[in-house]
Image 1 (cartoon, one colour):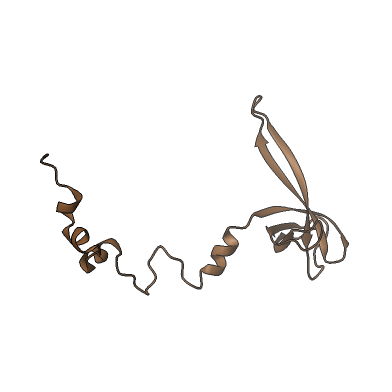
Image 2 (cartoon, rainbow, N blue to C red; image 1 turned 90 degrees about the vertical axis):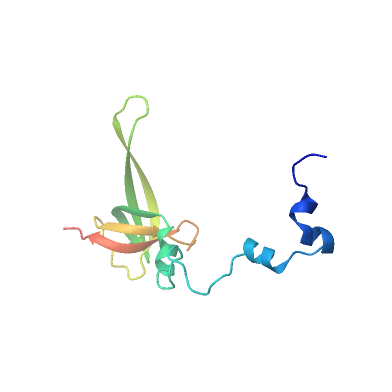
Length: 132
């Protein structure tokens, strides 16, 4: 026979009784505590943790003619992959404006949210700068 131990020699409790000893279970599953670990967010931080995963964009209001809705144009700048020139690309987002307080030209910050209508999936987070 070989000199290496077999499963029966290394774990006699399991081989003999067919059950795992209590001290073996304690090694496998450490005791859990009810205290939150430093890596877990606290209850107060859970609201900010949820909103942190949502997309936030900053843009300029180009239309406020609808009721409780404003159109925000967000300009994205990126380098062209081949020529290296900076290229501007713009996109318009329908944004929920509950108080109808936005005016054309306002610089605003919007955040992604659940669908509010057929095209509206963003809501107003804050007004960064008012139009002059």
